[in-house]
Image (cartoon, rainbow, N blue to C red; front, side, top):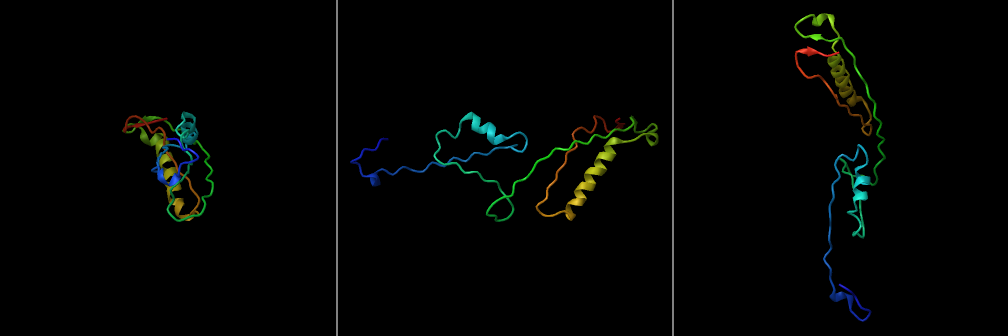
Length: 129
């Protein structure tokens, strides 16, 4: 629709168009950057970014993301044969994970840490190395 200098704009009411885009997994590699590169914002006049939080805030502090990789090495065996003579790396990893989870009640409300156990074996009766 084109406007001419002699047209009265009050007769041209355009409905607003609101587009909501969600970007999953942005914490691991810049989902917003990937989205910008695909071009969905090209026809938009205004773009806002929001990040949900559990309380009302005027601004959000920047959250730093640092990866720490911890590898546990055990001594392999079958769980029913000589398991007392082996070291279970999965048990050590689970103990560390649980300890970090319990520590959360002692840290400041705006501190964050999270963990995953990336590979924990393939059979429940095998103590991996």
